[in-house]
Length: 186
Image (cartoon, rainbow, N blue to C red; front, side, top):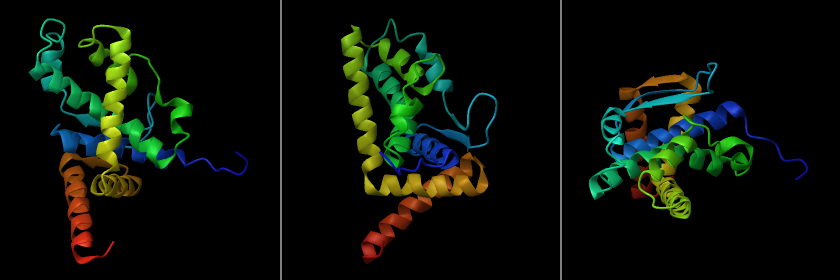
């Protein structure tokens, strides 16, 4: 496609991290902080409450019950939300680097978690596709996407945010969207 400009990598990173944060907020996963400050490993990162998840991962192989499955799904939705938000901002994002299967990557970690509950590779692939569709649905809700945009804008200005600030921006953006639609303003 001639003439197509790439999205600024810093903006893409802000949307990616904001997607994780908004999905975590939606799923009740505690956020510790968020940053788009680059380091040797990544362009940005988010700290979420994985302590509870870490306690249960070892039991996933033995206990595939609904409680563990729900816990896994919530965290996979958060992991996949970064890619979904970046792809919503820039559809070519997927082609560039989003489906990295390396251990420790969002996608690699999601695949590993899903693998504990899937009976076959085909089932795991379909399960991941369903969770990707689910997270796209969460982020396509107008108020959620508004929250992603507002949080990404704040990240671009502030670069690092603690948990309290992240929750404040997400809540204010949700209220802002709601108030705008109640009064007919957008």
